[in-house]
Amino acid sequence: MDHFKKMADKPDMGKTASFDKAKLKKTEKQENTLPTKEPIEQEKQSEIS
Image (spheres, helix red, strand yellow):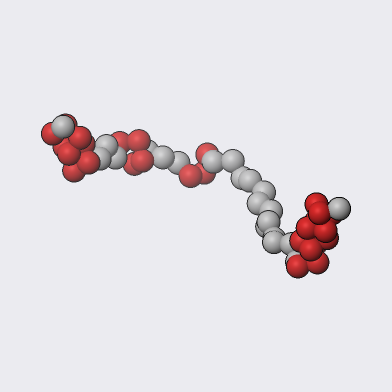
């Protein structure tokens, strides 16, 4: 189990040092808003019926 402790003490930074953020793809993000009380109540009523 000593080898796990050794790995955590000295992480391999080789890959992160050569990482180029410019090569990342641009993504579109969309806000996921919560529904208002009205649609929730309508869904509850339709489930009961």
